Image 1 (spheres, protein in one colour):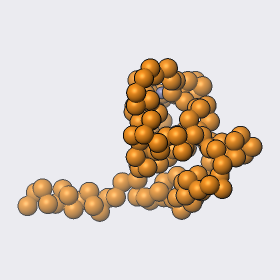
Image 2 (cartoon, rainbow, N blue to C red):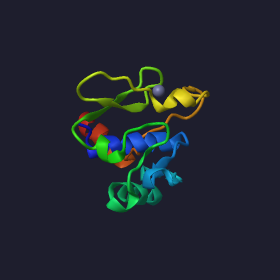
Image 3 (cartoon, rainbow, N blue to C red):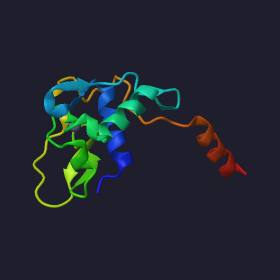
Length: 135
Ligand SMILES: [Zn+2]
């Protein structure tokens, strides 16, 4: 099943490409900006993520996809990499997977000249890891 962290990363990546999350069953759409702040997720993104997991947001799903966030967090779904663009996409844990990646309607994607979406990197933790490896 997709872990909460995988679904969070999935949203963070697509938000960085300008994809919105549709909430309240299609009545509104949200796109937190910025997604990353320094080496962590921004407060806007964290607030949005909390909201999307709460009952108040209703059915919510990434633009261009049919799976709600709640469904993604169930054991029917996993998050894998798109064959075309290596972005995270939901796949069914079992059965036939006839899904298209949300990149299908992004004609300019993949684009290796643009900065790629990323997760926040904790520079200090990484430096410490390197330091430990050296000693
Ligand atoms: Zn793709």
